[in-house]
Image 1 (cartoon, rainbow, N blue to C red):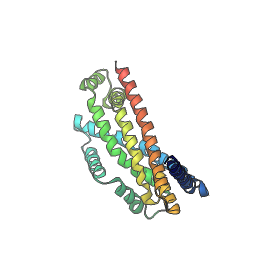
Image 2: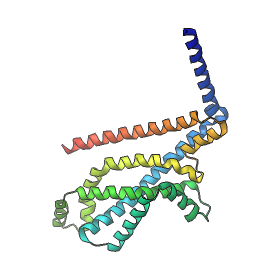
Image 3: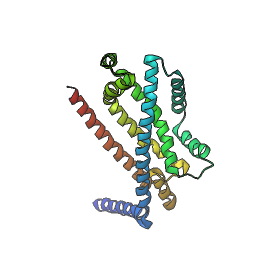
Length: 241
């Protein structure tokens, strides 16, 4: 009985090694995963920066309108932007960006993906910043005005630094969500991490090994980022004491 178990274990190990070789070592197919990972990280990083830029502007405009009832037209445009972007799937937005908006031009797929995911992320970041600004006590604005600052100076030097501290953990969690959302980049034939695993699957007709590898890589990245967010939250709590 022990010999039978040993034989099955040996056979399973040999099958694993053969599958690993077929999917990753043969013809250097691991390059599909490695190159896809680089593309995924590139899209995530630049889309996050674009999302923060758009979200900050939209959040300030909406908060300014709520506090002063100025910028009515800009606030209307921002509200329309938030409604459309948050009300439609990100994959549809990606397809519209590539096949409709840039359909008649020969443009690299990576900037298109960055633009699509950045615009999508900006809608959610805008609400994060808006809630962060609203969480700052109204007395801070009055204190800034009493010091001789105008509205923009008070927002820049007093309100936004406190708001950013309040929303930083939530902002990092949005970055994690953005990382996972980029897995739909393959819909425009962009070779990201998920597409790299799918290419290997199409070459070897073996789905388990490449797709599990992709899932494990995403899981490791999310765990690392979650760990960093946890450390950031603890540090922020300590600084408040």
